[in-house]
Length: 298
Image (cartoon, rainbow, N blue to C red; front, side):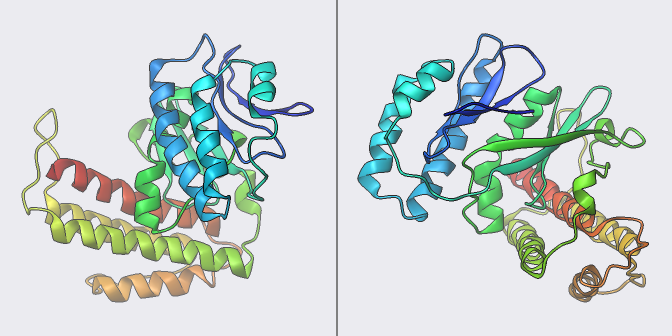
């Protein structure tokens, strides 16, 4: 839920007193207040989030001395809106950036947090707070995969949806929300296509640098590199009809990708998946396995 005051906007969790992120309107300053309900992990998530946010401010043209002074002021965190207002007033001028829109997909044991406008950026945790923390912990990895600076100034939780057929507990984001009814503008379509293609390029680069045999999971399981790539390719072929695009078996992967890209630009109105969800599901599956391959190659 987004809660606004005269000089501060806070993203609150359902638990009383738990505040994850806040930003003062008129200031380009990302903030975390560590309330009594929050865990040590929240502080770790903030440190990772903050590094990306300061990099974004620098690229956005905020003068270096100003954002460095504001970064040093990070040591003077005071919980509550009064402390935020007092410590931030006049520090940094405003950079016009939209909030990071996320939604939560609720399962029985697991919750997925997904960025509505950044396909592939979806992570899960055991509870809403853990899911959002994990999503923010992956900001740096996602920016690297997307080859873009991800502009995070504030976070807006746009809604919650129940998972479908236990998908969140199984390990995949499977629910569609009202935000998926929004049509993609030509600019947004180009943005989404670019992120999907960047996800494929990132997976290809990770696979090229990985050994054929990957370290096994804690229970001794997990696919090796080539089996994982085959799984991703076949999953994409299974996803394609959801947006009205049929890919014949044994189609070369590069050709299959080109067919999917073409299909995503002409999704019929009666398709099984809305185009926004299709982009998120495709990119999530690609990056989820790229990151798994990276982690198991270490």
